[in-house]
Image 1 (cartoon, one colour):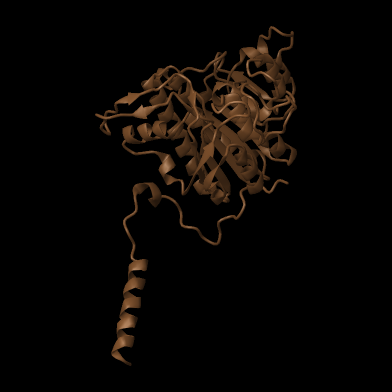
Image 2: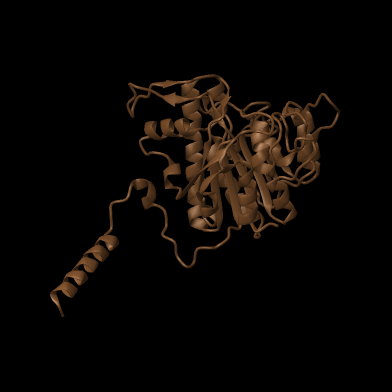
Length: 376
C-alpha cells in the first residue's frame, strides 16, 4: 500500500475516534435515557404544564438560585412561541390560554371562544371525546383564565360563575384548585354545583374539611378538591400541594383509563408575583413549579409513553437580572406591572417531542398536541 493511502487511512481513523469519544455531559442531560427501539413512537398521554407569566428571566433566576438547577435543563427539545392575541400584541392569560387550548387567536378576555365569541373546542374536550381521561391542577381558582380556557366557554373571563357552569358540561376526571365559592355559594342562581358534582358520583372535598395530603384518591371515582374558597395561599406562605398532587394526578389518570389521558398543570401565581413586582413571590412560585416539573418528568421517564410540554402563556413584569448579581444573590428589576410581548419558551420531553422545535404561534401548540395524539 502506498504511503499516501496509509496517511488517508490514519486521518479517517483519527476522525472516527474523535467522533466516538465520550465527552463530559452537563448534569442536566445525564439523566435523559438514550433512545431505544422500545421507546413508543406516539404518546398515550400528554401532560401540559403552564407557568403563568414565566419568561426566560424567571426561569434563569430560579435556575441560578436553586443549587440543583432547573428540571427544564433535562428537556431535549426547546422552542419559542409568539404570544400576541387576536386584538393586541400584548396578550392576557385568557386569550393566550385559549390559543394554546383551542388553536385560535382571540381577543383579550375571551375564554374558549373565537373573535366572534363562537365556542371553540379545546384539546381537553377533544381528548375526552376520544375516550381519554382528563385533568386540571392549578394554584389559582379553577375558574381562572388559564384553566377555564381548557374546559369552559365565556365571552368575559370575569364571569366566574358562568365559567363554573362549563365544568358541569364535561366529565373531567381530576380537578384540583381554588374557586370553591363559584360552585357552592353562587349569586347568579341558586344552584349548588359542589353538591351536584357529588350527586353525579364525584368525590368532592375541600381544604376547609380535609388536608389534601390526607385524602384518599380513589381512581374509581372522578376526583375534585378545592384548595381555596377563592385564591389558594402562596407557596412562600405554606402552600405545598402542587408537586405532590401533580404526581398523584398523573398516576390517578393512568390508572383511570388504559387508553390514555390529558392533564394540564398550571403554576398560576408566578404571574401574580410579576404583577406585584415581588421577586421573592415570583421566585418561590418558580421553585414550586420546578419541583412539580421534576415529579412529572420522573413519571414520564418511568412510563415512556407520556409527552410532557412545559411552556408559559406570556411573560409578566418585564423581569430582568441585572449587574451586580451573583448566582447566590440576584439583583432583579421589573419594567412594568403587566404582561409583555416577549416570546416564551416551550420545552418538550417524550414521544413526539421533536414537534416542538422552532419558532411558532401559540396556536400551533394545540395543533402539535393533536398531531402527537393522532387526533384528526
